[in-house]
Length: 84
Image (cartoon, rainbow, N blue to C red; front, side, top):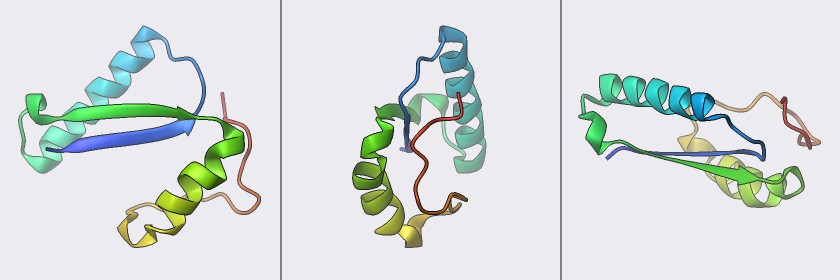
């Protein structure tokens, strides 16, 4: 506890980007939750843009809107390309 799950448009990350993301998230999570870094797990799952609406937006954003602490700022149609 805690576990963070990130879904994103498919792209390649450098080892430095991966390490930076893990370190930044771990720092923030341990500070906010008051937990040890060894208790944190992080999953990063690529999702093809064409599958985003069905596999992420509908089941995790629309259906669980009450759990979102931050809403996305995109509108319909859902973006089909990443920013990188």
